Length: 70
View 1 (cartoon, rainbow, N blue to C red):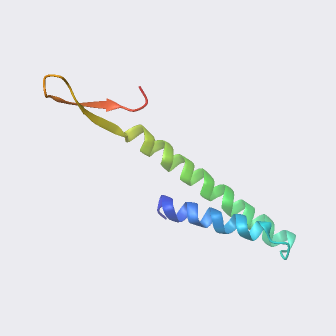
View 2: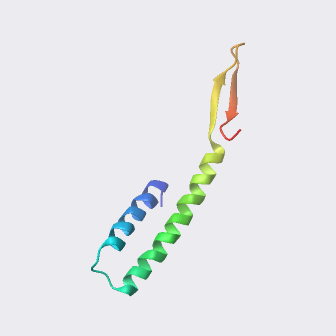
């Protein structure tokens, strides 16, 4: 499942959990699914952030990759 779909599913789960017409058992299952989606999305986001770099042009015209975390 893509990152975007995980976030979308998390939003659906939150809306469902906020509704008042849900059994405890169904709520717990949705909560567990939400935690799993959150962990997966968070890990994917961390991995993507580590890979992000910005190219900048130095004074001499040479392009240089810069890690955004630096």
